[in-house]
Amino acid sequence: MTGYKGLIERYRERLPVADDARIITLGEGSTPLIRLGNIPEAEDRGIELHAKFEGLNPTGSFKDRGMTMAITQAVSEGSQAVLCASTGNTSASAAAYAARAGLDCYVLIPDGKIAMGKLAQAMIHGSMVIQVEGNFDDGMRLVKQIAAEAPITLVNSVNPYRLQGQKTAAFEIVDELGRPPDFHCLPVGNAGNISAYWTGYCEYAGITTAVSNFLHGQCPYQHDAVTDKPPRMLGYQSSGAAPFLRGGFVEEPETVASAIRIGRPQSWDLAWAASRESEGWFDEFDDAEILAVQGLLAASEGIFCEPASAVSVAGALRDIRTGKIPPGSTVVCTLTGHGLKDPDIAMQQGSAVVKKVSADLDAVKQAILGDR
Ligand code: F0G
Image 1: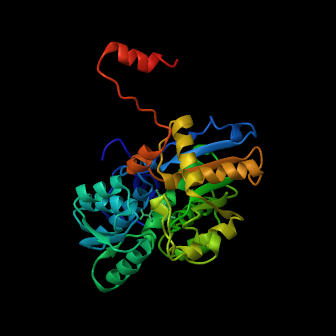
Image 2: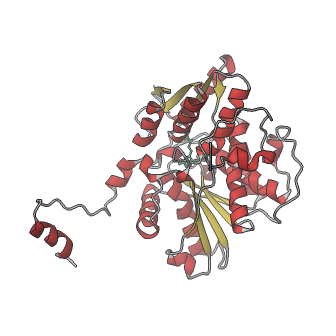
Image 3: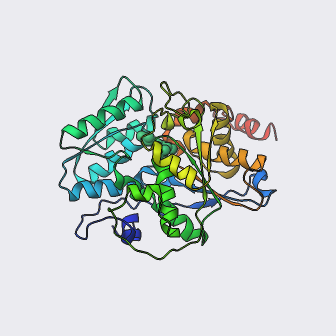
């Protein structure tokens, strides 16, 4: 690949990649950190609010960071096939990177419960799509059993190479801001990403954590600390799928944010450790609150993210309003996936103005100028 460095090339000395590995990349990472300057709640309190727009990765979500690592490793190990359960984005990313590597890819998705753009991606990249009559948690249980029995590499975030790749988002944020933010806000589903960010921030700060212990031995790096103190990690969930708020697994998760319709997060312990070690917290939002913030970002900042992603900004705004995030803080929210993934939800939002007119000048003039 010319011109565009993928994240393995950028952060190779901090990643467990064999010297002779064939790197499978689509130029992922290096996503923009966008200052949200049009939100008065933040501006009026002197809060620097940023969005890390991960929807601008090659397949439209943050999953590509983990997938370049997981697929590169699968190729290094001589694997011929990869497998995942998914609410949509993991399957889209696995399908694309597997196609590039020449591996077979099998994805298990909840029947009828994934956004159309994500399904289209898995299909066009040539993976085998298996629609399970059950939810994501059922799919997860099944793929773990299959991977234990068959020579197929599991590329869900229980694969530690996924978290290794995803931690690089924290590096990019610190590299760009010149310091870590005070607070980092994330949507939480399977809970891999919050664990990965915490690892990245701590690695840059030279701190060992429960999460880095989990990854220990993979990456024999010794580096000087780049920063002083990692941020507090704030994890936000959808009320219908909020095991971290309930203190236990949720049997029938339900939410408009289909990406995080998950009741049994695989990285349960790691995410609790990230929250506890960083002195962060979890909170929850209902569907209406999530869609309102998705609409706000689109209409006032020009950023189109998927509903699950908007949960992070919903969380930041509530905590700014209540003062849990104090004035003068620097806050980063990860927008995990692009809004085009889920066009149905966007079209159902009431804010769009569509007028149908005949193809004649007066009618169009009336439509445009009539209410100015
Ligand atoms: N946001 C989006 C857009 C997602 O697709 C996911 C997870 C999350 C947030 C939550 O991240 O699981 O690391 O806590 N999607 C997975 C999938 C489960 O199958 O695509 P997490």
